[in-house]
View 1 (cartoon, one colour):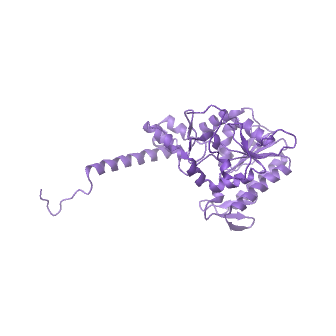
View 2 (cartoon, rainbow, N blue to C red):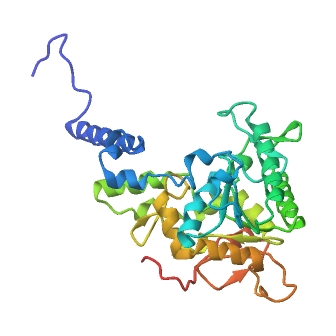
Length: 355
């Protein structure tokens, strides 16, 4: 068939056009899911909005607040110190022990590291100094409230360890270095012990950088399996290599609780447990996920026991070291300087898990 000089010649086949439309549809679905609960697809679907609900702890207004108004008691026994990865443990702790006398001392992006803060371009230039000041105020608060016995510390540490990250240390900026981060974390833990507190570090959940929360929500919306949303052992090890190394070193002297043994087996790490979507995004527990895991793994009891007795085979014996890596779902405990031990090759658990 002849075409005139101004005829429009089709550039794509019909198959390509249909593929493009399908891709646009998927992008539209994804965009709707990441909107907040008052807009987009998630806002019109109660189930999806529930999946995306963040775990904010006692209140979203408790970020960077150091006061008993962010406590369940005027005489708290357990303090939660760290960034948003400490905050997302609060719902789980209270789900496992509703009467817990807890105070939340969290500040987004600001890990519980003494005298050290990441310089993050997306935040105010004055923020690193505020982070260092926040942690100093946390220490003053702890000294002023001697009813506190246990201090739960957590951070993913990747904001400190990311390549090319600069850190504020004292009055000057330095290049990120795992040794500097580990030393600062240890300084916080040593300070706590020297002042009579019992610290326990909670390792971040296994992650590979993908938004697994969005992945699960998309799968549920489309009626598909979310099995592919989980990360493999190897990608988690690669993504969290420096974090695992720092935590393995800390575990030689202090107790570290890791979720990897429960969430990971058969070469992959799960994003759902017994039908419950665990994550809000790339690594934070969702509100429901935190409560579910808190109840299933008994956060309060496990954290307090690790802080009190450690995670070595000698725990509970007089004079036994309070250190080691604890898997809350199994009796096996270990102490090693190897980062691979923070990430057991295969889990053996007495807690019934989803298949």
